Image (cartoon, rainbow, N blue to C red):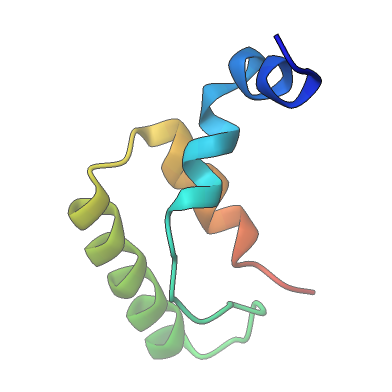
Length: 67
């Protein structure tokens, strides 16, 4: 098995996460409650569309957080 295939085989979520386009804005922790609720609603729409597991939802949401 080639090295790249072995890496993907050890963590199938990695390949899946790279294949899904998550076109959701980042969230920077601003204190505007409405912005946060809108952000969550957008994430929820993507999660329903892609039928993501709870683990994948957490990984995607984490990718969209900024400092």
